[in-house]
Image (cartoon, rainbow, N blue to C red):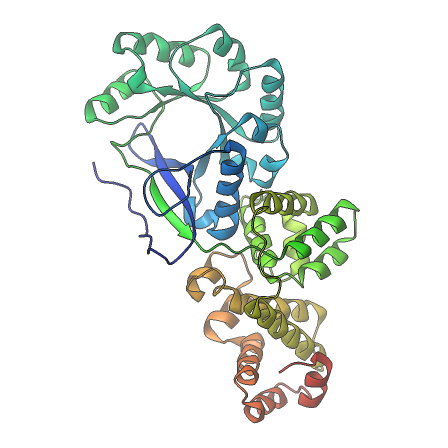
Length: 412
């Protein structure tokens, strides 16, 4: 059976990796992906810390790579250690899209059962991984789970019908994992398994991304503001100094639970913050600090500084227009910032912008140079290349005083 197609990983083109393996329904359709930690572009993974591996997958999936690229609109299965389940890190995830798998190393205690019930109440589904028999421990724990993953090759064929039947009678979704042949696939279907996964359908395949870690000091500042219940406006002002965190906030907003089931188109930092939520941002910042605690990045990245400068210029230019509004100025700031950040992620501009839930007029400005924001973006690029006279003409065409704007922003 052919593998599920996925984009190729270019060696050396990126430095973070996540593998995904499809989960199929009885009709052979991909309905979900299991996301797996990988520390290189090929082969397996060297895992010494289960909690850190899980949080690394989340950071890469939502931050460096993007959930849209990894799974589209499909659900995701995630391997979870005991420590992860009892942390606040799950709340970074869009609950309705994630199945949290309890690793076989976890002890199925009463406290874990209660915690799983809490997580289910928050919208997550819970799965038991690598199940090989119906033990008393598992039977007692079943009310706290939704899905049971049967470790297919490690169960005696004669015992499989009764094992599947027991879980089905308990009202659980049964997933047959490690299916490696057409015979096993057909047998699992005949026995009533709801979902199937294994090498017969596809081996885990790797997606890559460029690690994009915002400055630690800036993250700590945001953590301090959110932790002290600062107004959203103050948090938004702090985010303006951290372009990489802005891009990640947009991805968080894009993956957030939406009341109408659709991603809202965003035109300002305040809007993105309102959708993702200050608590969601706090959990995200704490996860970033945990995952990257061993290596602190350079604080003054020239690309990031240029993105800030371009954003500031475009905002001030809109403010200087006779008919400029605060809403348009906020959109101009976001446009200027996002127009350069694809380079930090080693992505094509079109791919980077298309996966973000930005308003159409921001998208058109960045990709096609359209509208007033597109014109301002062109002026900013002229200034960055040293073409001051041409930039001056462009500002005058927009009824903006060149001397006034350039004096205020103090750039270029």
